[in-house]
Every structure is written in C-alpha cells, then in structure tokens.
Length: 85
Image (cartoon, rainbow, N blue to C red; front, top):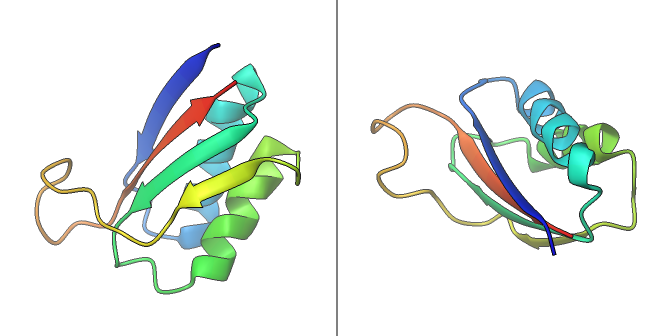
C-alpha cells in the first residue's frame, strides 16, 4: 500500500481540486480521503477538479464534509487530501 498527502490554499474550488488530483494521480489511488474547509461553497466544482486531476472516475471518495482543524490559519480556505493505493 502506498499513501500520499497533499494540501492546497487555492481559493478557486476547481483549481484546488485539480491541483490535488494531479498530485495524487502519481500513486493511482483507489480511495481518497477528503477534508476541506467550508469556504468551498461550490462542492461540485471542487470534486470535478479533483476527478479531472486524478483522471479516474472510479476512485472512491471518503469525506468532503468537514473542516481541517488547525491545519490552516483561521479564515483561510484550503483543503487536505490523503490518497491510498
């Protein structure tokens, strides 16, 4: 099993998801744990970018509804993902 974590502070939800997906694509994960801030109001764009970056629609997504406590200064948008192969 290989794991990889990556994070972003990009404000645009699609670009944030794309950047994270591209990073995680290197290990071709089967599962992605997604923890992101509530600042991403356009979840569909975030997830579209993530899957575009992964280039694999079969990747299972877990999470996507909570915030990352203490990972980023308060009030700044961001996200943190963990990929597992």
